[in-house]
Image (cartoon, rainbow, N blue to C red):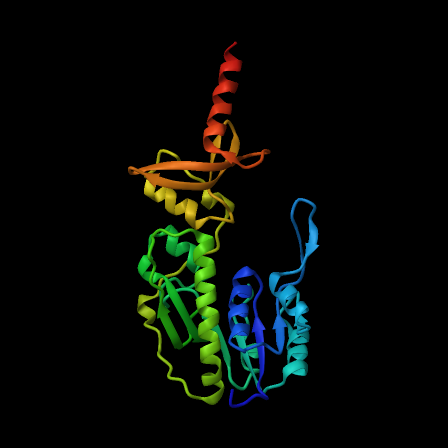
Amino acid sequence: MKNNKTKIVFFGTPQLSLWALQEMENAGIVPNLIVTAPAKPAGRGRVLTNTPVYDWASQRKIKTLTPQKIDSEFKDALKKEVGENSLFVVYAYGKILPKDILDIPKYGVINLHPSLLPKLRGPSPIRTAILQDQKNAVGISIIFLDEKMDHGPVLFQKKIPLKNWPISGLELDKMLSKEGGKALAEIIPSVIAGEIVLKEQEHKKATYCQFFKKEDAKINLNDDPYKNLLKIYAFEGWPVAYFEENGKKVKIIKARLEDGKLKILKVIPEGKKEMNYEDYLRGRQNNQALSKT
């Protein structure tokens, strides 16, 4: 990098961010400061758990800020740590940065977004691309952030070719995050050197995605098999596709299409451990037989 005095601040929270950070580190780009979400209760024991990005930074002894709110106190802390001679990098942070934060760094705020903007602006582009069968929207964009959501000018964009489609949600998460991390490592030196060309988005062609709720993952087993497979892939990990039977949820962990029909392979019935779907059906038949005797 031509200007090694520039401080890089990385804003990110989940595993998505970690994959990108790992690729940046592999290319020799390590942030001077990390901003991530505060620790939260997780798991059945509700144990207070740090974000994956926090743990990554801690292992490398990188200073980390975990603000509850993006307020004046946080703004002052940022300025104290890195000053104006800085570049902010955002990927899957989880909070919107207001204008007074965007105005701090001399080199601006760049954002990695895992879609081909202006397609799929919003918080769930990877999983929405699967859910809506939008193979042509799969890719990465790096933009300068402005005050509108995923609206700023594009400085890098790449379509990601896929050998197989549909693809599982976790697999696509990892693929796009790692590709995005590599792209960030390539573009950051150019941003600092002022050697970039910006392209305005075609805002009239913008499409949007939303936060998912648990109810969005409910499946009707009588629906179109391909549509159901897309939902199972899109909701892999969270909120997890499920169907209801006798008032209880049965999560679908693994499935595929066979001869145009949905073949469920593994499930987690409510209150039980993961099992083969055939075992679940066998147990259900046994219970029905017992109830008749």
